[in-house]
Length: 197
Image (tube, rainbow, N blue to C red; front, side, top):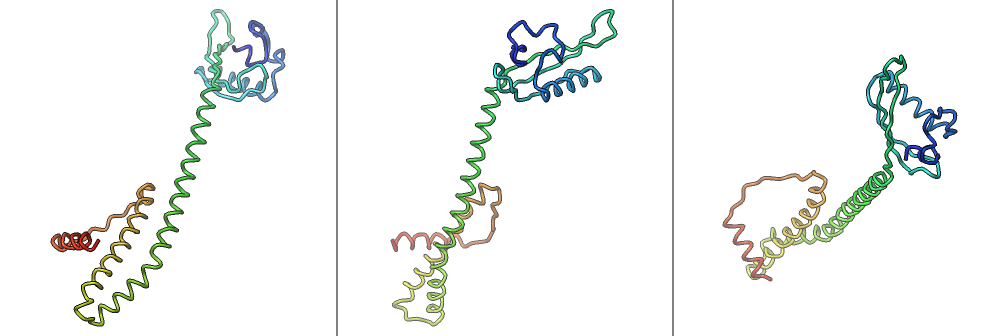
């Protein structure tokens, strides 16, 4: 109830002045400020605050509305007080869950970055070594095997790049590199990879 928000029993709020309420100074200052705003603007004012009275809800929302009393020069205000403790608790839980999810996503991105680096590092010297052997015109008996090794190392490096693209995609930072390929060669390589396995 409205009386409970001021630490009073039901029915004990009517007719009392601000001083008689003996409410915490900060809370009364907030209410007085909002009352003045409502009276000066002539428009409803809504505000939320955390209470300190043991008998009141933890969080409340108050809506003040101006009232014109016939024959009176004073502008009065009516008010409605709502218990929004459950909503605030839900908002806080949602915010905590969002922060936890963002932290988990950042941890995943860091893990993928480290993993891709660790996976790529041993591939580079192997790729360089195989490329050097291929440039030295090896015999036909090992040429096809070396080409298969070279091709699969490049494929593995591309898969590692795809792994990093997953984290970039989740952050909206995906980058597409368009290139023209020979579809016949792509199909032939795919068949060779399956055949080699």
